[in-house]
Image (cartoon, rainbow, N blue to C red; front, side):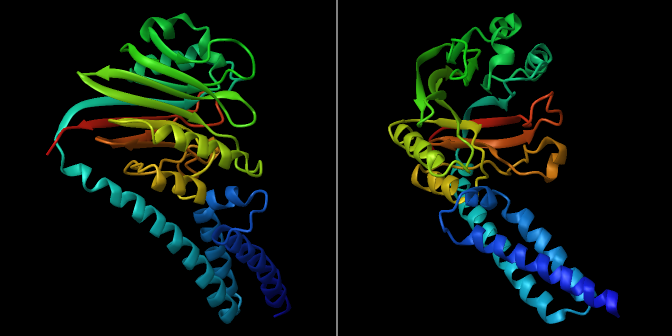
Length: 316
């Protein structure tokens, strides 16, 4: 009996911590790290449910019930955000497909020693467009430039140089913008023509969400760029936050972005499919992501890459 009481006390303490986490996920107090917790919403809810089950097993039924309500409410709130995002796909699914674009988006990690192997994998996948963040490991690999003779993004060495967009088709225009207060070259806008259709590719690598409001300022900068673009747009990159976190969800709503059919987990790589989807793809205009998957092998990176197929749509 004593062990049971002790377990109930320990689980009650854990439940209080978990419920506090749920409150921080659901109510904005603008405290450092809160945006990261929002990305972990479903993991926190699942952990809280397990604690509730444990409380019930040791006789803490009332406490278990209260804790379970918090967990289910948080998961439900996240599910509503996802439902609203997914609803944006329905009107586009009725339109005919006029072209397809295969996309790779991969933060390869600046310190990754496996640049040649990464390029070989990219060449095996053979996407039309490859968006590479922390691109130092692949910038000097000749095979990449041979397979993708057109590239937009930073070209000089140094820590500011980050994001590159590689393309099999020529760019009709491209811009490289320093992003936020850190002024790193992490926002690239490039226009190309694929199967006779003009497409704008936007590569974005956001600052980690626990740097106070720096990420929010970067999102506003990205929004100002996105609202000026016309025609089919593909936005991809390392957002360091899930699509259901407040800031990313707000960007998606304001910029009329359409999500992929699912949100593959990309970080941490050790958790594989049960990690969190902090790398994202969205479309706008007559473009729709029809399939998306995370690369099973991170190849020395701390992110898994995303491989997607995007349909460019015509008039009904």
